[in-house]
Length: 397
Image 1 (cartoon, rainbow, N blue to C red):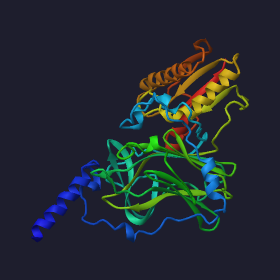
Image 2 (cartoon, rainbow, N blue to C red):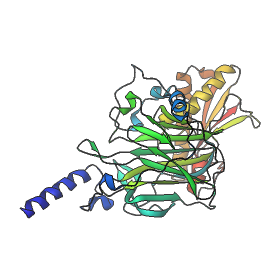
Image 3 (tube, rainbow, N blue to C red):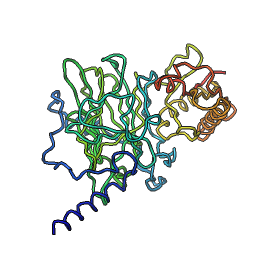
């Protein structure tokens, strides 16, 4: 009888692990899963006001309405058509403070550009994508490796991708938490779950369209703090708004309750200073706009859908100023062959031109030119420098 019970437990654990690549430690599942009842509660922000519920209800709206033209939810963010993000208004900060997609890390090892503060974590491929997994801890906590302890200090944006893996359709993962630290050991937690987002004590559930087929798919999370108001986005939707942020975050961590069978999984992290740039009112002191908000997959020229916030701003600028003409310049980092980077940058510039034309901008007002890895503005020996060099410039003609 004991043999039969042990065999059934083993088969159950193996069924869970098949949903995540067998490489790394997830191929060595331990027979321990902590009960949810034993988990510590999430931290809460003590600055909640009496009218917070009404404020959250009125401020929190999806960034894009449901569309009858939208296709069924695709298997990954790369397959999302740009038109689904046509009302997206998130614009990332332009000074990149930290960036990591874990592509240079080895499976089964700890991420080179992070520090472990509690629990355990490991890099592994999840559905073919390099990712960072918080695999053990109550709480597990990791922080970016930065040159200074305090590196934010004001308005900022944070983007990352996350996924909830399941066991036979039953969600077994906990929310991915971003802790915002300020003052003397004070912090506020932002929790990205599988059906809601909480910014401190403000919590809002997903719109119905976002809830559909959410599990076992990669999703894009975005967070912006600007003028004392924090907004959280998941995919094309603005899910939650907290208008009462009366502190300035100085640093961040990713944390949560992770286990080897139910890890917290995230990838493609980008932290930037500023954000919410008013493209229309921007002063062109150098006659150009330099943006890192138009992004592409590695070695590809297809525009990522979360780029639509920036593209919407550029399109509005052009429509409001019909005499302006732009050269669209594409730039890459120095990874790979120089000739390949040149060709890739040209293809990316042309993809941006084509997208703006599809948004109603006359093709005669735009030209596209690839500059490859030339004219770097960052250090190609660091992830942040490489991220700075991967950019699109709009130069007035």
